[in-house]
Length: 453
Ligand SMILES: O=P(O)(O)OC[C@H]1O[C@](O)(CO)[C@@H](O)[C@@H]1O
Ligand SMILES: [Mn+2]
Image: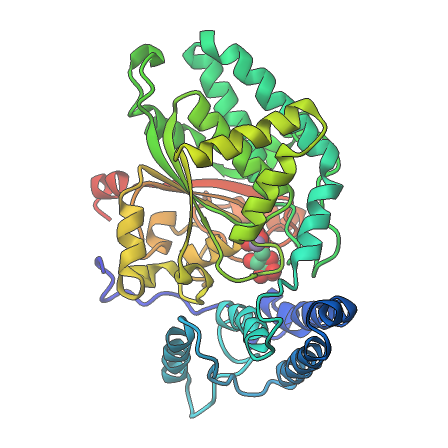
């Protein structure tokens, strides 16, 4: 890929740096998540029995013993082992392990505390899946489903107020001028941004829902957006609009989804707005093919969320759900899966390791990457200086104009002004990990060409 032959990127974040956020995650948060997974499987024992009889109970025991063993290996920093199941992505995982092994120094083995945090954290979620693959007939049990569903129900009031705001806005959209459109675009973009606060991985599965109306708090939250490239996103969106907006041309928008629950609703609301006002002609959603990082969206979550919304007895909420199903039916919205989204690679590896996905994304006019994990993969989860331009941290990954909508929950952040990070650190030592701050950070191949970088 592009001009990166001589450039050596900074080291990967890793639990080998004692006391770092990566270290604390691997030491404390990951075992807690595993314990909850084990507990969930155990609590579901009766259902497994009712559905499958004794074999269901045997499967429950097998999965639990596999996972307990893994938790112990993690906590005692044992070597990371190749996967032994025969799923479509098994080979890719094992090749990546070999790649990590080749990077190790002094004959050390790849292990939970010595290897890149991004890799081992992704590996844990894939190993949970391996435990289930080896435990038929419960192979497709989603260990995180309960938490995702709960987060949706607990955000009910916020969802209702958001759906009401959307439906009422769309009523006045017909006579809207450009200023109205721009202001509403900003609102829905920010709602989707702050929706990312509601993930269940940072809280190790602890309840984390949206209780209040998201619209009213936006002005107070503006100050916490550290980089705001909304104008650039707007320019891309309007580049395909005919003046006056009579003709609904619109862009192809791709949204790389993050969490189910409230965040997914904010993304669907944004996408609905974009299509309804003609800023986008099609929206392609990209979700995970296995349960991932506790709350990430799978196709089942996507379908469940639209159906659940449509079935609401609140008129605006249900009319949103009905409209979303219609967008799917008439092809304005499509949902896609690709194994790369649940592999541990940095996104700069995509052209070589998932060229088909890269070319799909090249057909987009604008790609929105939701959430913290996507940001970590965009920037390679490395110890970048905070002032390094976003485009440089992408290391050649730029299939189309892209924008990260992310609340900061891991200690990687680029593209800040000189002195900005120091100022933040002086005010709040947890500014990079608390989810209190956010970025709307954009990069475009056209901009990069002009800057010659
Ligand atoms: O759902 P999001 O925004 O990707 O957040 C998940 C993040 O939470 C964490 O678990 C916090 O460490 C990260 O591993 C991950 O980046
Ligand atoms: Mn997530």
